[in-house]
Amino acid sequence: MGVPRLRGFLFAAVVAGLAFADLAVVAGGAAADAQAQAPRVLVAKFDNDINPVTQQYLQDQVRHARSGGYDALVVELDTPGGLGSSMRNIVKTFLASKVPVVVYVSPGGSSADSAGAVIGQAADVLAMAPQTNIGSSTPISTTGQDFSKDLRRKIVNDAAAYISELAREHGRNAAAAEAMVRQASNYGAREAAAKNIVDVVSPTLPALLREIDGRVTKPKGIELHTAGATVDTVEMSFFQKARDLLIDPNIIALMLSLGIVGLLVELWNPGMVLPGTVGAISLIVGLYGLQVLPVSVAGVLMLLLSLGLFVTDALVTAHGALSLAGAVTFVIGALMLFDPAGPEYQVSLWTALAIAGTLVVLIGVALSRIIRARRNPVETGVGRLVGEEAEVRQGGLVALNGELWRAHRSDGSPLTPGDRVTVEAVEENLVLAVGSSTYHREDTE
Image: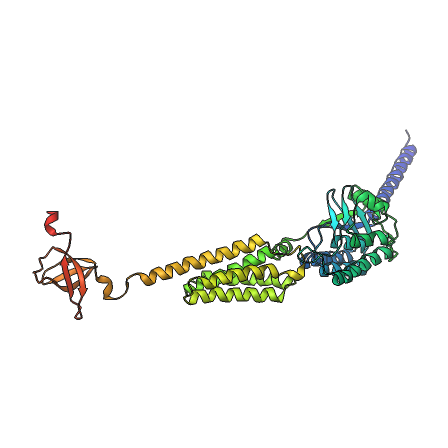
């Protein structure tokens, strides 16, 4: 090969290499652009009841989806229902959200009952996994029984209008949604889809995101871009779960009772500090729960009366009668305490009885010790020396508890050093009158 041909070959190779490099750069840039333009979806796990803590969690995720630039928020829902006030706040947040909200009743075996069904109707897209159900949204009283006729009509009509309007505005079956309130209807996933109560039935989240891609939501008119989306999943934080635990009515009642016990122990033993500190912390935790959940004023007053009866019995001689009255008052107050919160937020009768019984036992033990102490001989002053044994020393002295006391025999006989004697009386001049003891010096020799 000649020099000109060699130069031509090298030149062609260089040109081909540059062309391939340009193609690689273009391909890499296109891949990067495609990755940057891929839709992003935020998935919020919700497996809980609906209360002020979980309400704040969902509202935070709606704000997170907006500030994080997500294309959609998916709420994986499994709930038995909860507080009507929290439900309505969540509904308002979903309706005002600029980011499309998808409620997905999932996984299989989950349900969106009661307030959960209403929240689902407020979503831009309502989807269900197979083997899930939705409905049973009829309002019930705090005792689980029906309301009076007029009040029931008023409450049911309000709830029925609320859920049917949400369904109608989102293009769903308003009549079937209304039946969930008026007739407590409950639908499985396939039936709900057939009746147009839900929009989609999908077995998995990826399948759901592919199926709803391109859908235009009602009434907002937002086109969904979810196919092939990058999914970020969030759950309630440890602090949120702890707050949710602390608003359990049984935990609140337990914290209040621990507060009462701590204060009572501190009253019986001033200066111990620890019982009073634990009691104060428990009361603060209990009061936090009372602040979060709606409570009955009558129930709060009954618990305060119970506390007053227990404290009074600790300070006066009532032989436990006030403690029994306090226990009965505590049980009644605990059962009344969360009436406005609904049947899902009631103190268990057995929990109330167990706490009240524990308080009565503690008070009873304390009172029995007080009575026993009053019946015991005086344990202070020289009177406590009567009945004690002493050893006779030289010069008419006896050794008693490491001290030397002047003494004489009550029968007038002389004191012999080394004898064991028993104190029979303490005379005004602090001279001990002693008698013979069952133990004598000569017995040991």
